[in-house]
Image (cartoon, rainbow over all chains, first blue to last red; front, side):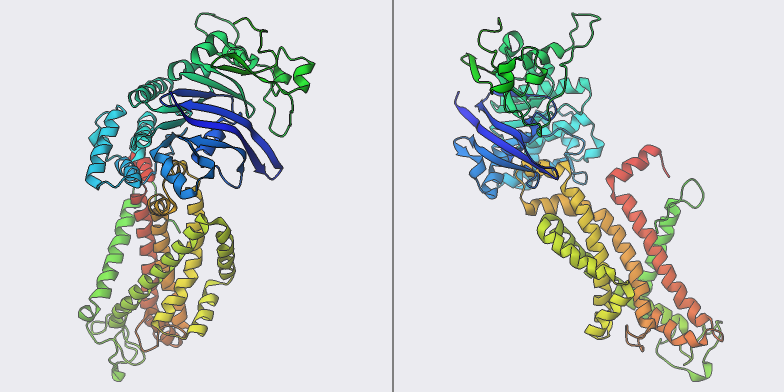
Length: 326
Length: 285
């Protein structure tokens, strides 16, 4: 499997009235072709803004790229002109957003929105594009696709809208799909449907996917590999099995302990004590140290190294090597 | 000036029907004025001057003996012409300024300050100043009033466009590789339509009032042309002797403005799919 997208030492700075601060700090990650990567982390860990920087959708007055490169199929996206970037966006890389309720234009029929998407990237006639739109809706398991083409977004349910969004995203057969918490706004049962759908489509179309979530619970079903972010930095990245069975970073372990289990009945819910430091508290050493049960003076003074636990398993922690039995 | 009627009785639908009917009647008057008016609106008849309303002259006659009914009918022509002209200029200019300002924020700051300066003048004063520069006449009246209402329209368009630009579906469209052109024409302009329809009806209505004011002050359409404003202006000295001369043109101005507002509200309610959904879920109003 060759690497499709590689983010190297990406740094992003946020600007507000209070001044500038680093919100993503020398982040590196890679996605191979056809691979599904789950990008996990709590709110404010920088996962969504990383996705936006890959898409070139950063609100330019608020967030700027301070360094690093984002290579997609051998080309640095950050060096491209706006026009080149737009060509890549949608056709090679597509994105699904959090809010299916507001991600569709309310005054356009959903069929027209899919057709527009196809015609924005390919020279096809309206009729041919409409036929493709019907196929796409069928592909995302929309009941009565031909009928739904003529519906306005407000006539569809949340799950149906997210299916339409998925159809739009898949319209030009992208090589990489970025899904930014696509199920957060949906009912739990609908969530499961959308997750299954995304996983199936990802495998059917042999497409790479970055699935952004704050919920480690959904990761097992959707991802081949998991990257855990904390406070704008990578904490741990490993194949999904290793994350659940052999994670070494105390933050990952803490997150896993937080997932409520059906086996441990009547137990209190576990939480990681403390709060994530805000980007303005500049911590030069390990950023998890204030909340970490294993933190020692070394952790509070020296930035942690990236330790290769196994060939595909990296943990950024002083205690990674040998401290944890797998 | 939004008219909202709730419950039974003279409700939303009846008001809309009334507005639509009135506008339709006025439109028919404007188009078919020469055939509908019983007499020549310019023909003078000195012996019959200042006749009260009656069988011969339904709305009476003025100080030259001209038939007020015929003049009122012909007045609707100029009213429609000015209304359409002003709406085109105000909406065209307003959309251009507003959308451009929203899409290019730095340029927008500058353009919006220019609009602010124009808006600082009272509407009539600005129109008068423009007439002084341009000279009087039908076209210049339209242009002057159009510029006055372009400022408020640009403000509305700017505000709505900024909100639309921040909507998730615009981000989604950008993520799918849509360019500025596509964003503006597919995602911003269509969503501007329902507020703009309402704005158009208000502008049409207020244009009537402004045009009448300009005519009344003698700075609008040349006085020989029968417009409602000119009729008011000419006959104001006869207000005690022949009040019908002011009553009927005044009534027409009020009726036109009111019914256009009703139509605007009705059109907005019909056009906005979200509003429609809200209505249908609450049952028929």
